[in-house]
Amino acid sequence: MSGLGLDIKKKFKSLIGKQDSFTSPVEEQIDRDSFPGDLPAVTKYKHTVLANPHEEQEVLEGIENIYYSHTDTSLYELEKLPEVLDLQDIDADRNRLRKQLNVVSKKVSDLVLQNHPAYARELQRVMELEKTLQLASVICANGRRNLSDARQIFTSASLKMLANVRKRQQLTGLLKSLRTIKTL
Image 1 (cartoon, rainbow, N blue to C red):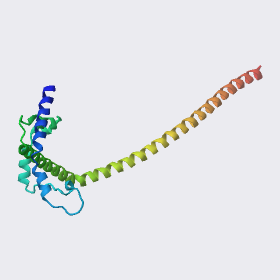
Image 2: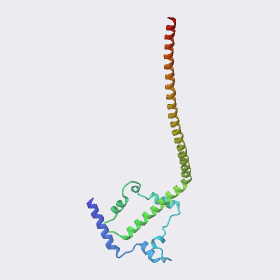
Image 3: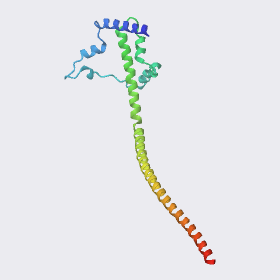
């Protein structure tokens, strides 16, 4: 990995050494354009978006598979740099990547907008389900409270009934004893 770091460091030093004499085409475009007002040049620079679906499809098909994986694509791009850096090649790669990014962003945006009604419906269903679950929770809590009260009342009533049955059995036994005494 340290050998890779040294190679990248050399490439950056080579690029920095050349940068004094070159400006990128984008910088030249921004320098040439006259912008009204005091807005920064970066906010005034507009990216071009492809309107042709066939061009967009070609750009999408031109995206390398590594960009679909979970690897560090910036490191991948740095490793692709040649030993001797050429600013025009780097700028062409940057433009290609920016075009790919714009197409992917547009596709994602289109999909989000296309699926927004379904998303809104599902979100409404989720919110209704949440209200229903809250209501069910309240009903369940009330049911548990009522069950606890009923259990307590039932237990008290059962104990009173058992006490009455016991008294009756005792009184029945006493009555038998009194009848026996009376007979004697």
